[in-house]
Image (tube, rainbow, N blue to C red):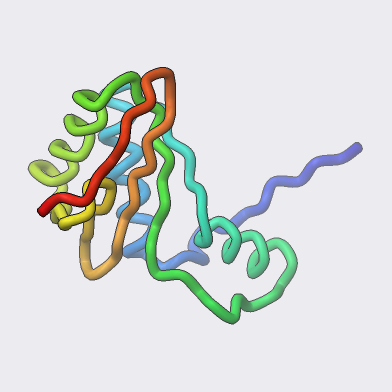
Length: 118
């Protein structure tokens, strides 16, 4: 069986790729594994692998982050806010940058609940 990787170089909006790269940079320095998930992945797959334009193109980025505890999760968020100008929102797992919403979805050994901040 022959496997071919999907080459999407230069095809995504630069603001999206910049955001993903910044999250990746911070996560690598903290030794946190990340995975791009959600509707953006669906849109990339349909459009660039199969040539179907998405009828409901998403404008947010969903990134699963593998963390051991809430402190590690909050530290990742704080680095993005302080070092890369992400903005916190009233939803604990959501940040914003350049009008793009970024959902950091925690998973890993230590489950914890995220709640809406007031």
